[in-house]
Image (cartoon, rainbow, N blue to C red; front, side):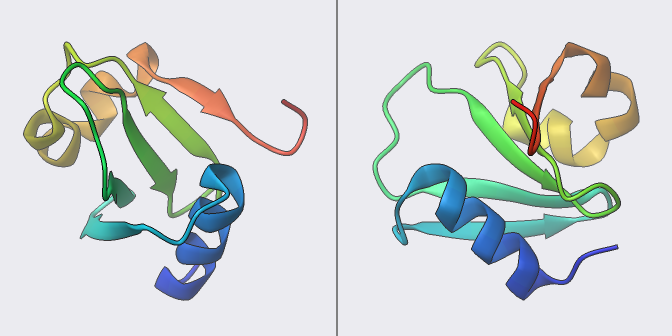
Length: 82
C-alpha cells in the first residue's frame, strides 16, 4: 500500500510534470492535470498496486471514484513493465 507522497511521485514521473493535483478516494488517487482538454482520459494511481490506470473519457471521474471496482476492468494499467 502506498502513501499520498508515493502517489505524487509516481504521477510526476508518469506525466513528466509537477502540474497536477491528486484527489483521494478509497482505491487510490485520481490525477487531475492542470491543463486537461475535453475528452481527456482520467488517470488513477492505485493505492494497493502503485499502478497507473487510464480510463476513457466515457467514464466520468465521479463514477471512477464511487464505483472503482465496477469500472476497473475498463481501465488500462500501466506499471513498470509497460
